Length: 93
Image 1 (cartoon, rainbow, N blue to C red):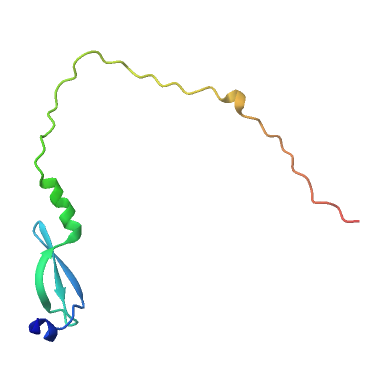
Image 2 (image 1 turned 90 degrees about the vertical axis):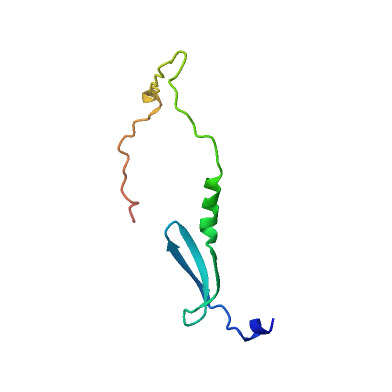
């Protein structure tokens, strides 16, 4: 604890992307490291990809396939044709 009292406070963190392992290091005001490096929090979520899952095997489709036919709905009767209806501003008398 006595050593911690004499240590300068952390001014910030620096992220180093070295190879495939980004690490963060606490630094003081001059940029000198003040502690151990640790895995970057944003990178730590990507470690979940290391969980071994069975890889999906691609196989030929079996059974029958149906073609999907999409038709556009007839909306011409729903569209109202607008006529020119411009008018002048009111006349002052």
